[in-house]
Length: 245
Ligand SMILES: [Fe+2]
Ligand SMILES: [Fe+2]
Image 1: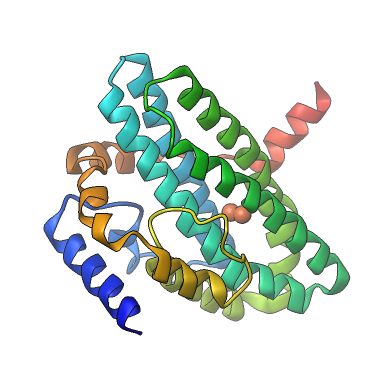
Image 2: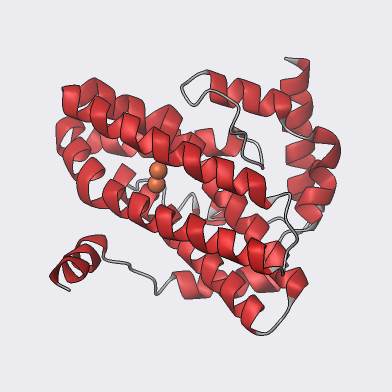
């Protein structure tokens, strides 16, 4: 519990002290009644936005900005993945029978692969070809994975649990995301409750301050948030177009 308290205290202090303004935390109130689908999709759009920002930084040769956006992206993916593993996939298993278990297992395997790649990314040099290639691979696999969630998983789950439960699940998902560590931990079991507890216990607490300081600046985040307002990736249409080629 001590480690949990320390992690929570440092996280909340860091939120006040540093430039951290990641993700849509400021909009949580306005999105309080989002459905699960909406909440998950909003996160997916954030990932794409941060990746676009990273690519732009690469195009203009700004290595520091590449590193900041890659961290922002990693942070968002890690929290999102853990939130799904704790809140969404168990719901699929509970309410969708064998099909739900099959989809959840498939999704967990894909998360594991993304986590391992992101973990490797931390050992590479931002700005290098290897670093950029790995991010490209991560985003390609993630795009496919996210589209599957939007096309297959959630359209099955939401009618099965109903709108009220979907909104409650969306709230649980957001709360869970706030508790997860800033880095991925591929060695940690990806089933609840281990991910949250072990993740927090293993979070690099002594480095959290530096870690937060290396996130995108407020101005950079502001620009990304503006662009996010106009993002609306249609997974089903994209998949259909790809299939017709
Ligand atoms: Fe996922
Ligand atoms: Fe997702």
